[in-house]
Image (cartoon, rainbow, N blue to C red; front, side):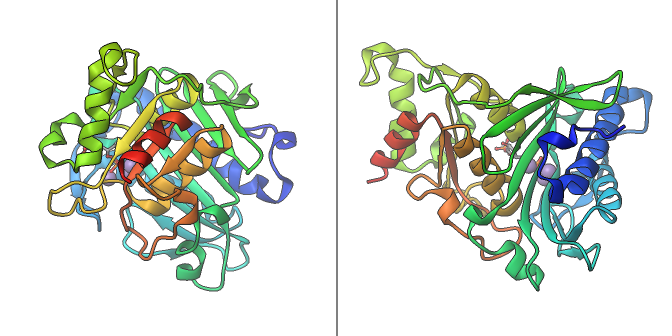
Amino acid sequence: MPAIDPDLIPADLFPTIEALCATGAKVAAVVARGALGPSLAAGVGENSDGDQQKALDVMADEMFEAALRTAGVRHYASEEQESVLSLDPEGAYALAIDPLDGSSNIDVNVTIGTIFSIFEAAETPEASFLRPASEQIAAGYIAFGQQCLLGITFGAGTMLFCLDPETGVFALADKAMAVPEAAKEYSINASNRRHWQVPVRVYVEECEAGETGGKGKNMNFRWVGSLVAETHRILTRGGTFLYPADARKGYEKGRLRMVYEVAPMAFLVEQAGGLATDGSERILDKSASELHERCPLVFGASEEVERVKALHG
Ligand code: AHG
Ligand code: MN
Ligand code: MN
Ligand code: MN
């Protein structure tokens, strides 16, 4: 039995999406066994962006790479691999992946996930991935939380699926996710406040001022530390998320990587009626110039994202 209903997936992309879903279900099972299986949170190395790699980062990457070898993918770009791998020379697609997002949450039983972005394959790996984010033909996340969820877009809205652990099938849960307009929550790693630029400080001060400030309403604060979990929350009940550029060395473009974190989330959020920018410019109009390049990210309900943009002048 396929891991997702073929009638809901564009036919050409079905083998790729099926491989992602079947592997996502396997990763979910590994995550669910936690301490009953091999250590998932042990440090095993460092990736090309300088992140510490946990055992589960590497395990998830190996599982997706193996499954995608026979699933229509010509070029495979992963957070956990320095350069692009050639999987199937006949494959029609280029797939970028963050195999395990939120790896600092592995050992504390907090939601983690997988993020992916798909383009038509071009002749070279560079031409396949270093191009406008608006050229993505699909993007999605798999969240390993209370449930295992798949959020996915093919450019005609954002759909939500929930894994039925009894059948191993991702069943449709919402055929058109929509970011609620009235934002009541904001998310930013506030421990970096001293490094922020003025527009970000002002926006956060406005959120904190609540009903006595210019917003005229109280805002709540959330920070999970897993982009997948924050994105799923915002797609479900609204709000804003910021991972801005800041004054720390290495954070001149924030923390998140354009090709396999920022671009796919921007596609999903816009397809659900929200906005995604780098503070000023629309993410989908931007291109990465290197595979692991970072990009500031501000996304969520359009009114809030427009406010951040206005503060940037
Ligand atoms: P990853 O675990 O794939 O490297 O991604 C971590 C990202 C993202 O999930 C989260 O929003 C952010 O890094 C957390 O950053 P801090 O280091 O500021 O906590
Ligand atoms: Mn990482
Ligand atoms: Mn990540
Ligand atoms: Mn990751």
